[in-house]
Image 1 (cartoon, rainbow, N blue to C red):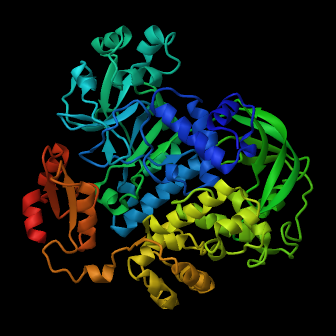
Image 2 (image 1 turned 90 degrees about the vertical axis):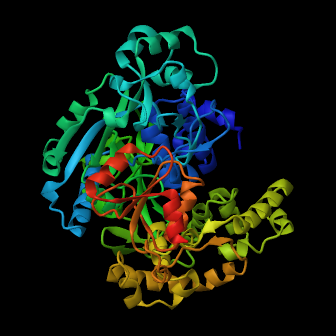
Amino acid sequence: MASSSSIVNQIIQQEVLLDDLSDDDLASFCQIANLAYRSGESIISDQDYDFIYLPALKQRLPHHPLLQSIEPEGRGFSEEKVLLPEVMLSTDKAYSWDEISKWIERLKKSAIEIDLNSNLIQIKATPKLDGFAGFDDGSRLYTRGDGKKGSDISRVFERGLQVYNDSERGQGAGEIVVKKSYFEAYLSEYFEYPRNFQASLIKEKALDKKAKQAIANKAALFVPFSQLPIRSVTIDELTTKFEQIVDTVLSMVDFDVDGVVFEATNEALKTQMGANRKFHRWQIAFKENKDKAQVTVLSVTPQVGRTGKITPVAELEPTQLSGAKIMRATGHHYGLVKSQGLGAGSVIELTRSGLVIPKINQVLKSAPVNIPEICPSCGEVLQWESDFLMCLNHTVCPAQVVGRMEYFFKILANNDGFGIATIEKLYEHGIRKVSQIYTLSIDDLSSMGFGEKTSINLVNQLKRSTSEQIEDWRFLAAFGVVRLGMGNCENLLNFYPINAIFELNLERISAINGFAELTAQMIVTGLDSIKPEFDLLSQYHFNLELTPLQKDLVEFTHSFSGKKIIFTGKMSGSREAMKKRAKSIGIKMVSSVSAKTDYLVVGEKAGQNKIKNAEKFGVEILSEADYLALIK
């Protein structure tokens, strides 16, 4: 493999195509580009990162750590990290109206669950600032860091930085930005992007004359999100006037923006939807790439996935789009190939958005199609399942076997070295199951053609994967059972311990909220198929963090059992540890105060907005000491 710096330079100069990058090189480049961006020293355009390289990483390595956690801040900040007063999540992103529409449907579904008329759902639209995210608690300013811990950059206010609209400090989350008009007039000849200048305000080195002047002129500011102008709309208005709303909101502020943030404002709905590890489900940011091209298809090639699904990949007449040469695009499924005439000689409308291989919007000119009859990997006769062409030779098909083994290590996400190239080489030497990989010694790997250092590293990474703690639901998800992604695994393990799930039947799984009968049946079948492999791998005693069981939680008799609680302010210990402890003893954690919240537990320098809302809704307010005394 070429050195990281060599690969980065080749990508920047467009000397290497996206399709030719290995998974490791792509992941490394995304991490370097992300850190550079967050340091104010961008190496590629935001558009290329958002619409090409990051979506590429999502498709190839959907569970890469960069995609599962809050984006880290860049280099140049103090190494010392401190706990944030509140967890700062990222914002989920949408790149098309279709994705926004699906988000709206999720809002409506959650509204039904709490008996809220969907006509009463209010949506707040605000500009998505392209600055440096931070949290101001009134006395200190923090970078967002990893969402839980950030750097103390209070020096920015000590240097004279003001809050937008001359408002007071202590308004929580926001961003450090520079006025767009000021940047264009006074700074654009010295800095390539506003973000490069904004970085100079934050770093520990002394401010230069231009930065001091921008602060003095109130052109550089901290903008709390609560101070942003708002466009309030109903769901019907958002549906019928989407483009108009986006255009209006994008022009609301004199700052660099890279999208529009939509969020539900109904507190009960926000509580119902909650959040995952990375973002709030009631909020989404829309970012659009309008570049399109009409491209001629040269041929369509079938590719086999780990589940046996055959994906058509269109080989294209080389086309420049948004500054990159595009040569391939996914055809999604063979139902589309057949219905729209996606064949050699057809003409398609292409955009670079949301997928590793650029997206086909529509087929503009149809052509005769070639539907494969046998699997290109194993030669088995293919079968139709709805719109999907499938290879059902799951246990023997080489592409599926390799795909499943690679998927296992991707999902574990606690090891390095077991990418597609390594797995394919192992397959060539007779390895067909993950459990076989764990039996390999350094000598075994060396005899397969791996170098001595590589063989030692691979064995060490296998040991690391068993000793480094991972969640039990992640371990289960790594086996790739259909309909048992990480979310469903976690839901299932909320009710049954991991070693008991193989005894479950259709009735017991479908009785869990979120599992339809068809899904439950597929899970039962899938669990039965992986049990032998699960048993073999369990012998290596993976260090699993077990999910607390709901049926055990109800046995607690403290006064908070089953109650909805939210923490705010600085606690004596880690707030995340407090949340984890609370969940383990039957307390329901919520992310915002509403009429359905039971208690607000406050620490030092607690958020005033949460306290005001608690008083408004009649929520009982407790000090940390009172809370701890009651659960003990």
